[in-house]
Length: 274
Ligand SMILES: Cc1cc2nc3c(=O)[nH]c(=O)nc-3n(C[C@H](O)[C@H](O)[C@H](O)COP(=O)(O)OP(=O)(O)OC[C@H]3O[C@@H](n4cnc5c(N)ncnc54)[C@H](O)[C@@H]3O)c2cc1C
Ligand code: FES
Image (cartoon, rainbow, N blue to C red; front, side):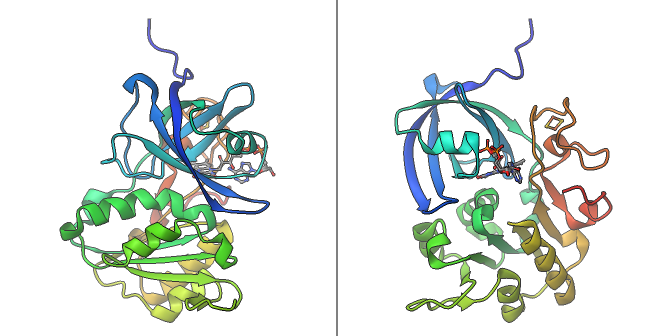
């Protein structure tokens, strides 16, 4: 008999890091599969994480595929399941099923300059690509990371971004001036424009709130990036994750199977249902 696709594997929370405090807090969970019964994944893929008795949520796998000992997830507390996840402790067991979705074509980007543009919790889905590029540093050109939060308290992966500075240009921003802040003040799309990254031999990868993505893409086009060289991810609500229930559709496209990673060339022709 074939295995039930909805049956999760078991994962134990090995570490929890508080990234961002407040009403829409973000925590990063490091999860190890119980008894080594896990799965491999590619950059950009996600997994359904379940809290028993509460439900399950689709979450991007925020650790790179070459990291085999655990999978990492950065989760914003917005509702029932994510609040239940935030209430868990190290040692607690959750369900994980996946991996789901397509992947960033990272192998095709060898030799190219990579420009990552993230906002809020949107650094998590692109973090595996950043980790992969840094791990294979000699295979890629210049790496630039633009990332912003509403305030300095909303910046996630602070230590990791700091460590990245040897391998990449890191341009952080917050929306409004704060005492002691020496990065950019203003929205992420404006920070990108102020540094005028060159489209020459470059790929831009952006993830964050839809309004940020909209203006980032507008600005990248103005800088001369082609639709084929701009990538993003979309987070339509998902239920089954395996192309059965129709919950995630954009037009006829099942985002859980054909997404969440899209080039702007592919996404701009789909109906605006994301
Ligand atoms: C491919 C994919 C990757 C994702 N990656 C991450 C991630 O890495 N980290 C993370 O924190 N979240 C991620 N999400 C979003 C996450 O799945 C939802 O926030 C979560 O399912 C909400 O569940 P809940 O039960 O806590 O909230 P609910 O109780 O279901 O909802 C609470 C509120 O949030 C809104 N909401 C719920 N889901 C979404 C959504 N997908 N988009 C917009 N609004 C929503 C609801 O309308 C409601 O207002 C991802 C979603 C997808 C589809
Ligand atoms: S989530 Fe069910 S079809 Fe995509």
